[in-house]
Image 1 (cartoon, rainbow, N blue to C red):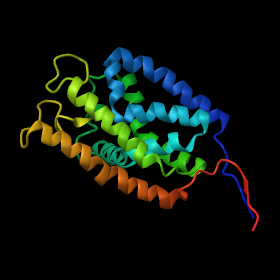
Image 2 (image 1 turned 90 degrees about the horizontal axis):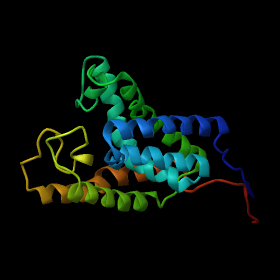
Image 3 (image 1 turned 180 degrees about the vertical axis):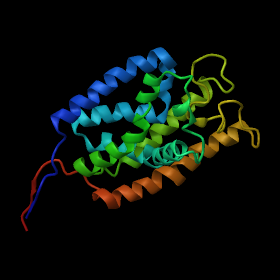
Length: 219
């Protein structure tokens, strides 16, 4: 019995994705500083770059587990804000004329990246290790952001409250529970509420196993 391989990633897509990252990375470094790349979405963007070139299912699956649901919310809020009916306000900055249009246009990757990841997982197959890999990576990132990065409010152009480790607002830290309790809630809640449901969805959606080459078996 022979199982057909899923096709790889076209060269034109690899080059286009690489060109985009080659523009975004220096622009973001100048605009926001290196700590901006601690955000889950930016980590996912760069991990996907490696996945695209290596055609590695785990490198595509892990960021898919982490950002598909949050970025889907971003997409819905962006469309709602564009229509004058914002859902959460998380994309209000995309319509802020005080921010450079070019930088805002680069941030539009939040809109298309979840669709790219879904396509990559379908194309390469889903690696079931992704949930564990992204969860451990997320715990490491959250710890760095909580213990080493600045809390709100902002005192410069550098990011504060990265990955919402101090609350949902960048203007002031949350005060309805102790800070360590909020941090612990993120460590437990994100895997339970976001990562694991996405993992289960992708297992069903992409078959739960990478399919990079034809596999022949005898029965």
